[in-house]
Length: 302
Length: 302
Image (cartoon, rainbow over all chains, first blue to last red; front, side, top):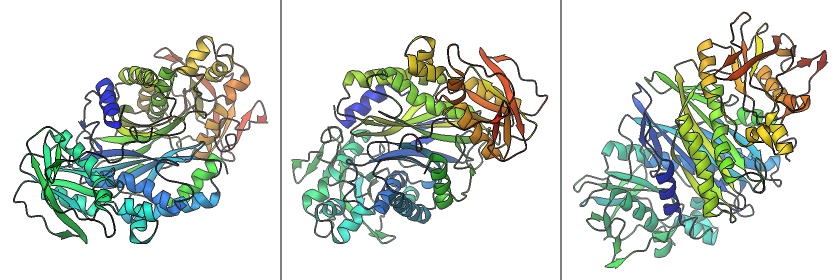
């Protein structure tokens, strides 16, 4: 079973509607509307597990703390939200020293301050391997949170930044690409800009363009054609740009004719293709079907 | 370092106030007040890790799913809230079969339905050992969430139900005590009743009366005297009732003279002592100081 099929099965078994629940399983965040509130609440939760999402020997403690939070913030950015509070569940392994914990929180705190999000709780435990699960709670004006299921045939597809940097960094462990891998920048300001621009769909690129675009297309019930040159991170291969995970850039679609600036807050915005009619999730690149080869825990990790 | 000192250190390093954050680190739930809302939102997150919180050979899959959710629901009950949605982060181990996953969700779903809480999202991963982190989001009328820091000298101390059942069950693995251990009942209806009764402080008994009462007293800056006979689960020892974890009953304090019924919804409510002036966290039982011997991951588990 792969991740998508397991999610489908879970959704089939346990998901039902609830008062106030606007978006449930399947988007970057769940969206809840409190009674009488002017803002919707966004919730997301993300693992960061030793040996799976990071390696003890490879990733410095402060980069682990930074990335634990960055993964959640990127989901809030993808919905056009503003992060407010977070909760951190942290299971420490026997090898974890006080110095490591200090380093972890140094990285965590740096990103929390920069993103104006406050740690409001969590849970602590011991485990064989270090594991974090981050919860980020954000807000968006009522009814305005971006979703991944709104893309329509004719829409233009964009990505922010340059792709493949994180995969290149993990492979080479040096230079700007390594920094990009260690300390990804959640695109929070850009997400709010896209919300105001009324893009039709958005999500973050956590598992690789080919897989994440596939997911956006499946959610929207559409197909896609990649027609333009991809913005590739300097030094990265086309494969890293297409399939590499953890770039934490934003993928979004707009109605044709929408004026999308070439840069926003120092981040390039590049048109890479268009949404077309067709079998949901089918992606064509240079006339050939593109397989969604990005990261899937339940295909590769098993 | 023990759990309390690690929490203190984390709180000292990263906690700062934020718009809308009413209760932060240190209570059963964080409390957030959305702009314009009539209700406050409660957030809690709880680990359930193989080899730490449950044993693969001992705990059936459906009991693991039930307990993963019950731990979060009990925190919502402790604040007098009503659960609305939950998110589940699930890391599956190599040994996890599809049958096990089905069993897990059978138990999870049973409790979710009974508690009217909807699974709205989460994250999936693979790991060496199975781990769950549950997030429950609840609501309480604005400003009415119960806290653990409101106990004042003169208040009477109560507990719900009978204590030590879960510890007895884990030791004997049979009978009603074993069922209590496997499928604890979060006291949601009772929590809402206590909120309306305007109790001065409340929390759930997850780590044992001695440790949890200590925490309530420290949060409130008071001491306590246990003056009455404890309501002991049939067959449990006094030590199991005093120090045994995972009963998930409620501990609460009321102003003297408050009319507390002897039972509520089939659950006994028993007065066990009173709050007194004194060093914060000092608890006296039969003239002697009671040591907080309940479960602390960072004292025993290390």
